[in-house]
Image (cartoon, rainbow, N blue to C red; front, side):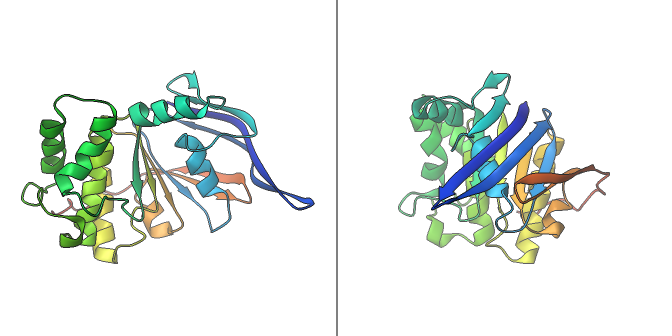
Length: 232
């Protein structure tokens, strides 16, 4: 699924070279649910951008579904993102003048999917939002907006879901609800990588990778106790 070998990403700042990633090697298998945790400036967002094909490393290689995507050009990376990756962001990134249904349809339009309407409806029903399809983002709660974002991430049936601080704008109860939803998706076979700075969020994941100063400092697998089902 994901295989990274010796990823390095650095930036020149005046006379200084800042190493955002410093030799990261990482494998994620199909169907895993992984937390990447680290403090601000640790390199986790840079790693997230590379995993999401939003950026490329200066050195090293990244294989996604056995394809080396670390040297692709911008158009090729955009094609990989549209077909292989579903994104969930802290800020939701919903179009404010589009309904929930229309927001979920957006990635399908880029792929020119003929039955976009039906697929978007199905994705929202899966998220428990069958009665909110015609609502606009400002008519939805934070948890509902994040569910719309998750439906949008799932609607193209991506190989991997990348979630960047997906509970950062939610209260603790709604955060638990969203993380329980991710756990359900994992149980159904989805591959999820969740970037967070919160240990309580990382604790939902059976695997936790900690990053500091651009390096992986720990990679722990553990048993995760069953949690209550998410509510809609």
